[in-house]
View 1 (cartoon, rainbow, N blue to C red):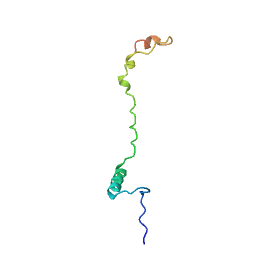
View 2: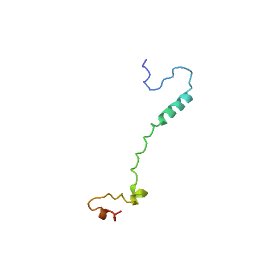
View 3: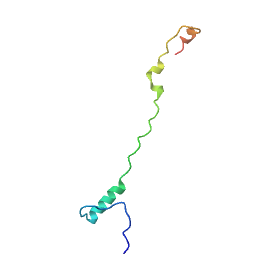
View 4: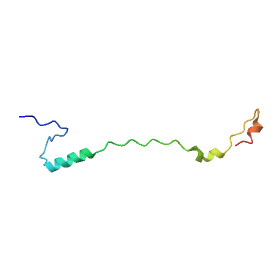
Length: 70
């Protein structure tokens, strides 16, 4: 007598019908691994309202020139 083929599923307790086993096999076969979260896109800096504000003017060489630039 040949041993039954090795499988990953074995009924340990109870008396499962072939229909119940088939439903269990289908449920396990269609189960998917959890998806990895989508990578976060870098923030879009062009929409940042702080971009339109000018930087503080610091005293020093050519500070007058930097006061006119945004």
